[in-house]
Length: 367
Ligand code: G6P
Image (tube, rainbow, N blue to C red; front, side, top):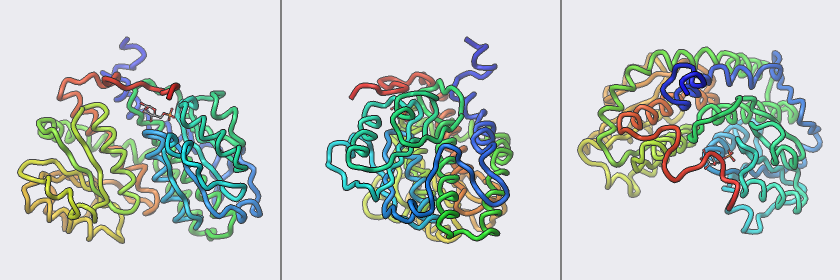
């Protein structure tokens, strides 16, 4: 009923609006000035040195969170990270041993394939850290360590606040590893932590500033049966989640690509009016993504960009959403928000059952 939705039309919209609070709860008590404290994880510097690989295993949105996790951990803690879907991992005799750290990610803690992956990894001698939301569920019970997201109950089938919570945990884990391995100087760490603490207000600001504009954009994009998302670096991880959100709830065929791959095939599908969403938050590769945007524009695509605020040279964008200044590595927590809202309003525009999309379940407890 309306009461549980606190006046929002759908649980998904309520949960998107709860995200500032999700991040706040997730970081509370875990960040001090220069260090991250994860009570539930007790890895020594020696143990961390011994891991030559991190394996992230999950399904759906949790898998997409793992793609951001790979970027964060490789970037800050300098250890190779492989991300795998649980239903692949469990059946292909994965190369995992006591020198592999396995991180499984699951909102519900009950996804059958992900739970099987925990057992597979442990059988092979790996230590397993679970990143989960539902307290006391199966995966936290079986994992060696657990880091709870503390996002509270998530009702909408399409995950939003749990995703934000998962990537927030990945950033904390990456900083934690990097500090233990002596790879992150005090000053750098303090800046990252300061920026993390600013994220809740920044998310709230993005929702406030973009929601009305997204409704207009949604009316235009809702007419299409295809949409493409592009990005580079961490943006390439975030667009994967943007495309998943759109297809899950609006039934538009949405695909994401690393921006540099566009011209190796997908560009053939871009014609007059095709929606393309381009994330260009990373200063080091922004120009490259913007030149891909030009290629799309030249073929009549309608481009929405997500960029840092105050940038001028973006005349190729038809629509533009700005995210406020933060550390380059952290942008995913901000840039995903307009993509969630876009998926939501497009689905509403198309008359879809947003909270209960056809054929999908909140938690997949059978194979
Ligand atoms: C289902 C849900 C997705 C979710 C996935 C993994 O497919 O519809 O939203 O991302 O399961 O769920 P988990 O609980 O393991 O995160």
